[in-house]
Image (cartoon, rainbow, N blue to C red):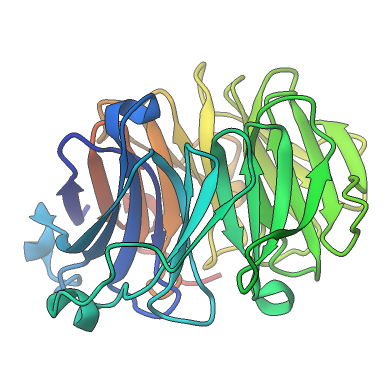
Length: 339
């Protein structure tokens, strides 16, 4: 398995995202002292351009620039309509919008060291951030440990709507990529909530108990508008169908430790990846049964970040508390064609 890596000394990885514009670029959001105290750093990384050669195995990702924030950074999202802009979510309850995140600006040392905008309304850590696409391209969605979600217009300083419907810490929220104005959220109250971003009353359309324990992550299928998945501290991954939400439509067991992040593949309707607190990243293929097709144990701490490269079929990136970020194509998918 060909792998490129990057080590962020004294910074622990929480989230990473491939650029929607450049196949070789990705952003990595990190925190000092495991996010418990100290600052955070945002890294713009570049893959070795010779990604199809076996000589790339074990090579390092290039670090183009590094930006600092006064508190830990827990999530990152690229702007869907500007190639050099991204947003981060922080432990101080704020969101930051950064610019100059491109190779030319970074190589000329022209990337601004301070964010363009800082949005501050949440009262506790912001743990999840999603930048709307298609119908919601101008909006940011934030999920916080203050038990609220907020919808932002990135051209305004104040939020548009505050959504209230969870009774505990909110770990994740994601816009549907296929249904306008619909988003999902998960919380340590165990519930999966569905919301209409145009409902300014800020109440959920639906709330179901997705896990008997904490629900920590969710993601939407890129192929079936009705399907989404959740992961919990019970080690379970559950699939849901919007047409029959009384119970989950499938269940995968990812081990005795928590599932921290899920990523549905943009290249195959059946493929799913999970980042886990047992230090592994697991690859699942729903067409091949309920067991993981591959278990990668390249980390020595919690795996927290996970993303598929939209430009390269089955290329995956993960990061963890061990300060290591990896980019690779899972062995079980290396011979597969796009489904």
